[in-house]
Length: 121
Image (tube, rainbow, N blue to C red; front, side, top):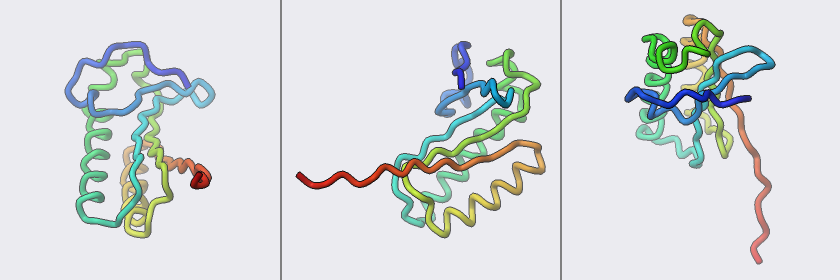
């Protein structure tokens, strides 16, 4: 997946972790990184929802098309890349987000990177 070469110029795009083109699927991909463990707190879920709102706004309000014309008109996908498996409350919220994004014809994927625990030395 190639990162877009255009500089970020808008306020919203500064909150997007990665903006890229997936040449295999010919999709614009917005990546949201979540390195923290899921704690099920209202604060964490609200922050996640606010981040998704910013990503969707970036796509639907034309900011991506103006900031990254090479990606304009391509199908869009948001990828949530997690360092840990989401907990039950997060999974429920992510399911709702998935359904709402589908109405906007935006694909959504969750990628969990399961690093094996390191032995204590």
